[in-house]
Length: 132
Image (tube, rainbow, N blue to C red):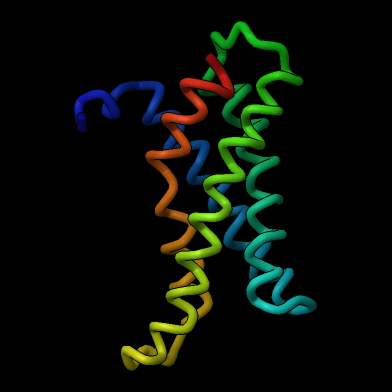
């Protein structure tokens, strides 16, 4: 299983996804100035998703035979699952970390973990559906 992930394409996905995750994370901090945490997480995810699509289509899944429109449709579907994972984990940690005694950087820690979790499921979804 691990071997199937360790290839050039997955490493490119990690790099471009890492950049998109940084956009996601940074934009959440900005959005959080005007929005509650939950709304900021979702809006930041959408910002990161647009970044991820452009980077993945341009640099990772370059051999895709699907049209941009079809790829975008599947990309949104795969990310619909991923945003639910990100939101659920971020929100759970947002409330659980203080209970566990963590009092500093709670939104940042919660959101960073939430963003990291769907890496493997997103890669498989994009490889099999979005950019096949």
